[in-house]
Length: 449
Image 1 (cartoon, rainbow, N blue to C red):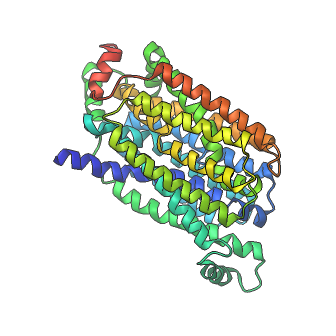
Image 2: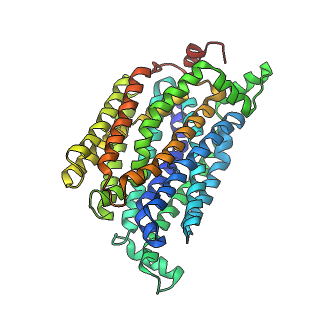
Image 3: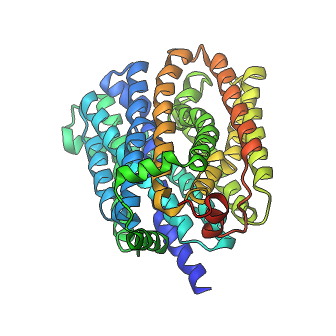
């Protein structure tokens, strides 16, 4: 029981990384229109912000660095230093007065997010017991949902016309004087939201740097040292690609996660903006809808956390993607111009989020690789997925158009991507439930690694 409690405690501490990951994406998204008006940004500018942010390229670059660093120097190494980089990026966003500053802040924050994600999922899995590994991964996903929900609430309260906007105006005028332009005052609501992320990052950094090193990683390093094996980063990279089972696993996991994430990354960053332009609702209404959707995601994930270690993984996986496809079918049938279609889409997308592919990617990604290159393999896949998502984000802005005129075409693209993820997942779903990480590694790799 004590060990079980310990794994839960460390899971909660590490899961704050997911809070900060999703929080950074949604904080940018919820204030996107405000920054657009303040800096005079075009849709292409918004596409570039998405391209280099925690949603795409920034996280991609960070992941491939962080994954191999976590395998070389340990999971604790990441937790000791990484969030200091995150706080630097957030500070840069908070004080941005032009597009290059904002872009640099998004990039630095994104890199930090990417560095932390492979280590966090790896640490959670390695510190969990056989009967609660899926539960703990789901808890980390709940943090990924709670972050956006809180950030959106703050965004709405501080937004122009929100309950606390008077306080925002007072702070803005205290910094810039009483003759500030309206758009300059309004963007302070987004600055304050990013300040909340800075505070959470500081708290998370103090908790995470006190964590003990993963025993799985220490045992793996001790075994490699006893055998006189090379433990360098390039050797780990070479080892990963020289093993046929590992390469097939990378292809499978990248296949299910990439196709799903190409859809989810767009929704994570552009969703409030889409609701406003294609759905025709106000910024406040869009954020309320998004907030309710995140509440649904958290609730459904909680239910899944109770089932995932006892129920067929394939069953949950298929259910989530069928719901996701159904949500986008509503776009091409009912549309999102009316409230019924918009709400149906929001609710269904919330349900799929609670059973999302990311849960299984995080779980299987830590189960299907041996400890010596477990984080590095995840970092590589995260790099591929978020990097291609960055390119897709730019393409999406051209398909979508300035006012959402291409949204139906985009919806067909989303349906196709989700269908591929469904098929690949059904074909390749592994049987890992109820098995220890050592047992899974032995069954898959034998004595090869």
